[in-house]
Length: 497
Image 1: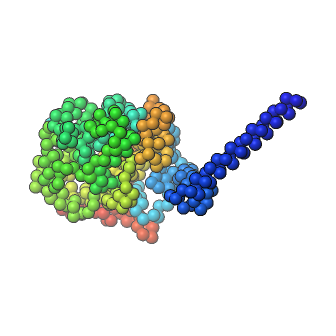
Image 2 (image 1 turned 30 degrees about the horizontal axis):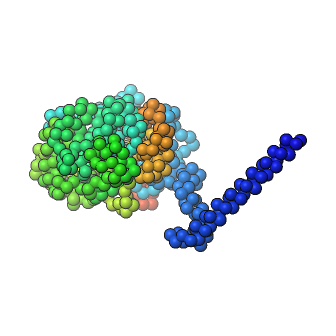
Image 3 (image 1 turned 90 degrees about the horizontal axis):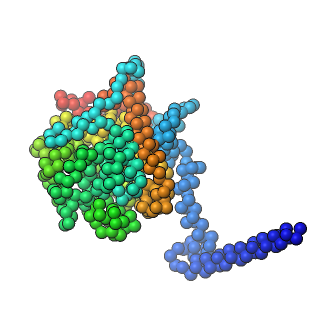
């Protein structure tokens, strides 16, 4: 009994002390809030006003788990993320009862099922496709679905390593992003597309200019299959890459050729490319030096500008890029100004059919491959792009989800809770490469498999045979129209079909 009484007394004293400490902390916070001048809410409502910031911060997490419907959330909704999660886990992706998708929303693609589709033994996987037929070392790309550009620096060491190993297992290529080629891109032994950004990271000399010697060095690496000259990115057209200072460690600084601990802001365009002649000169130079296919990545702004580009291509057909990656204004990034993310650049849904038509009109259908990018993460997105005219589709955020991304929207703060976009070892330890690379590979394979399923359903024996007539686009009022009527394609006979 005495022991119990003593224990109760001790607990009572501890409770009183705790109340006293909390009261003291509240008093200190009250005085701080009342005297500070930066936040009017905290000044007018000391202590209580602090909860506003807390609830605003937590709101984005609560919305995605408790309040948003399956198809409501942006940039990616729960239905999209859960499909990827099931694909990565290797479990069935069948669903019950009915679709949660509102198919009357304007712009929704609806695939046209064939009355008599091929039997199960009458369709095949997509064949590899040649890129760069005029290059000394063309690339026979095995997969139509691949990993889009994500730099080491923007992404962590374990994230890049897992992507590399997963790409190898799935037989897809991995784009380095504009941050240069790291050992972690090469770790898995997958095919590599080396991206050259406006700062020329990884291929620059001491003055920051394009280095032929460095290009040759990279081209001698067997894994490096192609080079991509990035003119613009969907999330920030007209703005260079942004790598916060806290992410620029010694290793990243060495790979990129920049100063450790300083924010790295790329120029808003290539300093040595001021017109299309300059662009074609650089494309031809890189292809000659490396012997590998060379393409460009850009964002469509208007048909006028795109037509001007192809007019210049037609004047110098021997120097045209081997591929064009079209990124949509809905594309993502680690850090960009909100006005550019929200308001600049044509959507890939509009841009891809337009670029495809112009390419075909100017006679480059068999010479220039089209790669589509920009928020294409599920099989329906990829199938739409192939039907619209893409030869390949790349995804970045889809593969981030396969790594375990929870859409915390902290990519630019070095505090990513899943270890994907942070260089803080405390967070990185949560990303176990041996587990994640298998999920990356499963995701890629499942997308490819289900796109093949859609192709089978519309009546063709492999995905690249899908055409715009196999898709209907929902318009105002819920009625759909054939895509080849809404956005007719251009064929070699000069007629629209």
